[in-house]
Length: 242
Image (cartoon, rainbow, N blue to C red; front, side):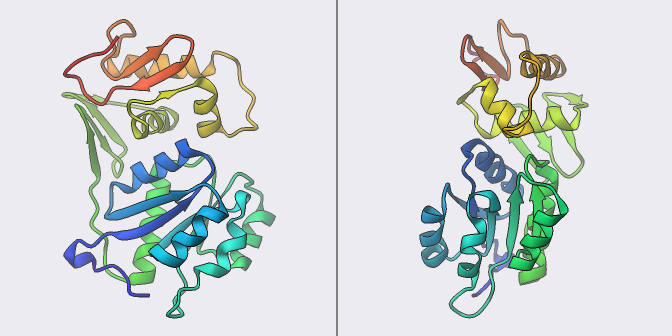
């Protein structure tokens, strides 16, 4: 399969197979830092036609929902193996070794840090196709600037010092801008479905993030509260919403 021509700005096509839409949005949002065109699928049945017809250059597959079943289909018609980054919620050595034996190029445990995911996809792309994909370290969301390379966040003229968890929380909210995320959705996306935490854990992290963003809950600048529902990211400062 012919690889992307990075010198001309041609994007590499990335297939993302995840059954968690919020996490899939984080992957797509993170890959905006590079020249990537992403499509998502929530099952093997949705992913298989995309592999055969869209012919992605890289596949990010959730091994826990059947990624292993379509690994053999990542063999392209020209005999070139599509590189695969595997995702799993099971971080034990046996699971990782089994994935490598099945033919994956790399593996990450969910939840993951956006910085690490981007670095691994960039490395896989570079190893497979040569050249260096264009990389934009800064993504702008209204007056928020996210510098993934240097792990820096700026809100207006203020530099923020976020913990890794706060940065992942900001990515999750920003990747789903305008959409209300429930506390359970945030918990499952950042900690995993099996994590058990106090009922106010999410609220505490939101309060901490808001304080650093100088975001009051009555007149929110970036993160709005939807009473009884959850939280919503506001991508601009121009017209604060209640």
